[in-house]
Image (cartoon, rainbow, N blue to C red):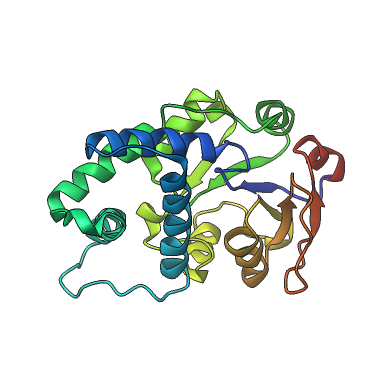
Length: 239
């Protein structure tokens, strides 16, 4: 008998190569702004964007009082990062909103799956409920799954647009649990590459975790995933 009933997969850099998607989308944004693309600027954007969302995920992002609805909050967060990153351009908020829409659309263009992602899900989906838990936009996530031919293996998807919070916020995992038919956390396993959003989030919520560690990085003492894999097919052998 399988120990787990529900497998919760992170999407970006676990099933989909997110770096290629981001690089393509950022190139389009640079062209839209009439700037010259270079790799140094792209690396700066990656560092900024990671830190920006980490601030939000840590609960340290200040949202203006006039932002009331969940939809407006998500719109503000995604547009505001372009205003801050390109601050010398003094972007108008509405233009930043349209810029973010373009960026999100372009994230779904250059899609490359992580090696053996489709093979793994094809082998697992008849035996497990497979859920995607992502911090990315819902529309982008669905587009990525469709283009990588992974969508047919997925039972459900949870993202910030639907719950108002991101991994590793406890509210995100509360929503994940509440929306799941399986109510036994001991039969859930979260698989992800990010120690902070995926592994720590799972640890804090009482869900077993699997750290996808393709680069064989060392594990800091404060994290203790249930299992570690270096390639996706290794997961099947450990379940």
